[in-house]
Image (tube, rainbow, N blue to C red; front, side):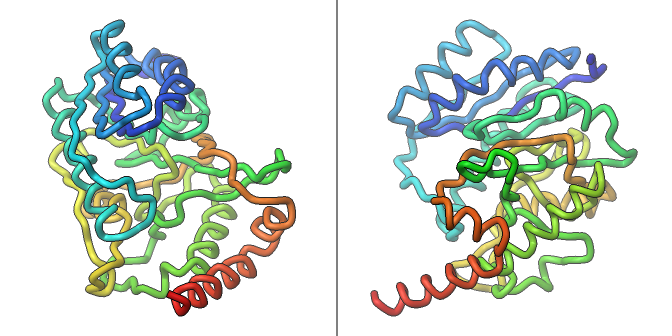
Length: 293
């Protein structure tokens, strides 16, 4: 499958040596689908040997560009203002590095710490994409333990459906309960359609037409003027693409396994079959835990 186009694969990396080693062959296979390619990696503050693995990759392949730096940032895993602001900084740095190279036809932004992804499905999603597309997003899943065929939709935080606007979204739409509902909705749509039109999504991999992002930037945007809660950095980025007249789709064939969801047997069953019940329990726990502090 040769896509008669050029591509730049953009990666962010921090303390993910094993994931890079695991995904490197698949990333290189993806690059082989294109006439020309580069791989650009922004790495910061790794302590597990990630920087050395990346440098070895660059030494053996002149098309791999590694931008390593230390900003001594705290590693955060939540959706706080601090974390999203730092992700915006990193993603904009990656965009700047990409723009130092000859302009490609396509840019693939990938979370390199994903567990696995379907290379052929990604290539087919590009080759068969509807006219007018600006972004193609992954069908990102988390596997449930001991349930090989049960999968849980991933990355609802980056999802914004057709008809939704940032100015109309409020804090209640980002509770655990509501996010589960949104994930379930996307899951049902993806099962029925090869390409599900959205205003934003991500799922671990985003494929962009370069013309749609050549002057775009990531931004930190607050929800309801909150001092703490902000939109996922992908949302305003994708809204800009849509405002240019391009379409964004979640692609059924672009399967990404974001890893095993760490949960016991009973919890896994509740998450899969009764997601609203699990969401309520999570909200109750957060409320009680907050009062105890």
